[in-house]
Image (tube, rainbow, N blue to C red; front, top):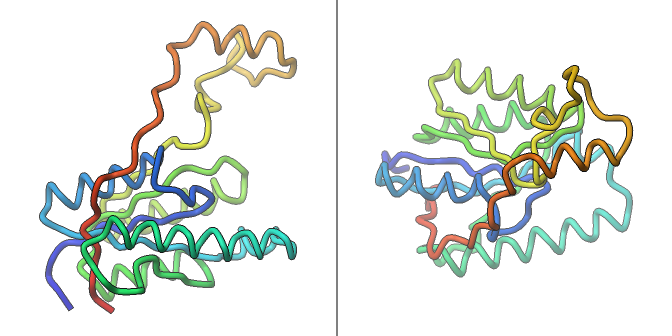
Length: 187
């Protein structure tokens, strides 16, 4: 095991290197702290309960492609560039943090109620262990809480929603993929 600080990059439905704000933040953190990135994917009940046969096939192929892409950018010849886990995400992330010099965890936000509840619980638990936790906007042009009616409620009709979006500052340009990733080489 190494004492080099680790930033866990928790991939979820964002199985890409380009335009991935959490990945860029994890790489930046690792560079600033002379650390490494540990990319993980966790098939937890929030995800697995929603998978059908075609989606499972797609997920398997997508995870393989992502792992190969990470390997090309990484400084490791290991075939374990993307670590795959199955089970409760909170338990798995805590186990990873307990067994390694993890100091930070990064992920991109999901907005469905089960994911939001899970992520809030995970963030609080990891912060209680002294870890830096960052979630990022990656899949939407605007956060749901940024586009509200004049009375602060959610829109129910598209046209007023669209007009409200047009009054907001334009969305950011897509991020390019990192040029390299210092990967965690431990077990």
